[in-house]
Length: 220
Image (cartoon, rainbow, N blue to C red; front, side):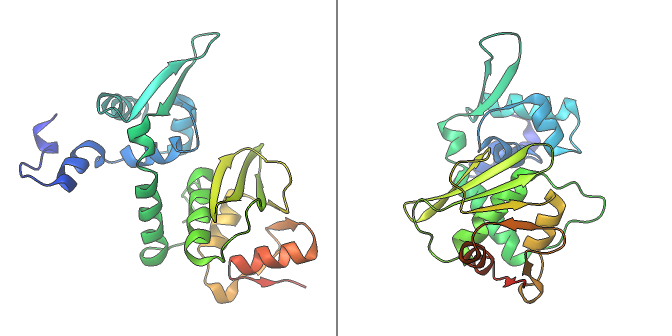
């Protein structure tokens, strides 16, 4: 390990930061929490990271036992996935996201890309902290452009986030990533659903419950 990455005093927080505290490392973990990704998927989601830096971070995370790679059964395509140690960082990502919601919430700037993973992890964390306890089996689906879909399903009193459009959705949301991120970071008193940029489909009672879960008024 590089000398400038070592804190040189005993502390388990310091030990953890020596492994995952570099810029981009936790965001790579964030993007792998929902399942394996290819190098190009990660590069697209992280936007500003260079190929060289992403390669370096992935290698360090592999060396630390947080990420592992696997080749597709056919072809030379390589996928990256989290190990058990990497998956154990899930609550850390959620806690950092909640801190950001409560203490550093800002709408995305005009020149900032909005990764769908970060928007949807923020959605899940918002509901877990501020939303009502969900009924098991309740399913909501988000459809972003270009087939970028996500599902939130209530299981055992909490929310499980997965990629893809799940079956049996009580509510389906159609929006751009930016429109949903703008909504999620807006003041509660200004929230309306559906609105000009966010379409919400479902039975009236289900749409009303969905809007109330996000502290939004139901548009007439």
